Length: 392
Image (cartoon, rainbow, N blue to C red):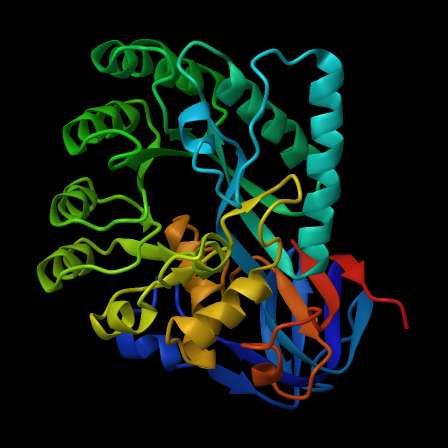
């Protein structure tokens, strides 16, 4: 099937098949008088308006602005008890016993909230599933995500989060993760990434490195999850392990930021969490000036807690973390895709990429970036199909 999007005021996008760093984050391509041609779910061409052949389906943008589908590179499904004690905005605490009725209800609520996320223009969501050592929450959550992947148009990226030790001794807990949990995840093929909470509220640097090495050996891609603090050794671990992203970054020394830059690690900042927890905002300006490829995410719990909209996180990134509107747009599209190692497939509007697009009901993209309030989304195209269209 082919589709043509017509009557577009602007097509606004970063360009590239990898993360944009430093000054590159401000470089957007803006096209006017253009149509977008979609074939078999992929962007085929961005052509002069009215040129070429007629397509099977015509989508009228009605003078709106088209941007790439948004990518939320940091959300959570559930949290282990040690993290839940911090009462963060992004998490829910699940009971240790989960009868089938509870999982059915959880699936329903997750699907409902993911559809809301999609209506806001987010077409790709990473979901972190944490596990206590002696329970099966993480594995069952990852299995549930596989069901949602098959039933929803939004793209879901499942991540196993090693975040707590429960009642185990530390050595025993790390050993169980390596000997039992990670091999089970490998056998079941239910996760793409393994993220490790590193810091005072999680694992030590040495423990995190051991877990990440085991995860890499099992075919999982590594990520590092900080606990509100930077730290030279933690940043160095992220660089040494060449993690896809290091999340909850707020600041860093020049040497630690250089290590991240040299290893092409994407720092993910979460300004919404800073607001809800009354913490200092991430210094996004310093990270970009250090020529890092900054991504912005929500830290949303997909059960309705915290910031459910990438737009709110983006507005805070502009108002409080020093990003320009152009940098902010790049941070929630191409760079967020890079944090999920998907920048070769999504995150920009160019031929050869998946047709994940948002049509905004604005005259200029800057009206949507940095403004708090309802998302001005007119329609969402996900994988080449119309996933949402606002009523007239």
